[in-house]
Length: 294
Image (cartoon, rainbow, N blue to C red; front, side):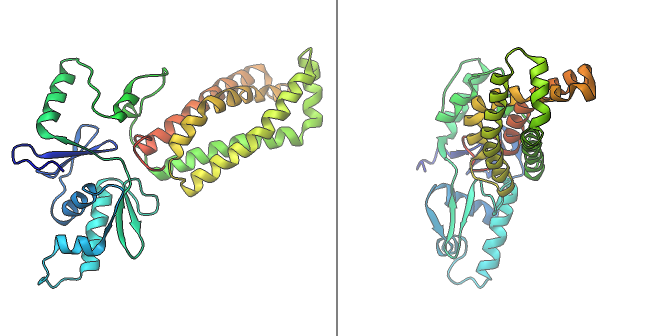
């Protein structure tokens, strides 16, 4: 922490900024309710030692003098819970504050410390249209694809994201399993539709056999809240996209029952689904490179 009476340090972690002088908390540049009292003291102590375990005894000594008579455990738990509420964090799936049983707490996100004066210079440059890189995380703002940026997407409740993402994985699993189970009906359709059905049949079998374990992994990761799932999915996205694009043609296996028009409409909708998965995880996680989990 910078030791200066003129410049008050500002902590950055994930999409958040904390002015330790005023207790003002900002998320993606937007002010949130001010943190005061014991929750602020706890957060400052954790931010001063990112990645290290801060014991309950250390927090007790910082928050209460030795001659204070108070239920330390209850008061500390209350302060940490208020802090987690302010950061939209959860003890079960922590993105920032991890509980170390019977020991204390650890701040698990990347922390950057900047001086107040340097932050004002940076903000003025950004308003003037000058591109400034202040941390490794800002390089992610450069667009690699014409896709939604995490800063453009609204926040979404983690439970809703987990539910919708899990349902998408179940949908694909149903595609794979039903196609394999009805292979004796699928094969004649392929022979009637294309000139070289053996290659298409082999592609269908191969992608289904690859897709089943991939979907089971993503489904279990969503249900149990794997830490870092958004980042893992972004790495898998270049491989998942062609797989999903191919299986978007699955409605044409039922073209005799549903007709060409409906098959085209469902295929068009399925082509959007891989991008919706990406957006869902980013909405539930904020910034996947800074946060720890879904």
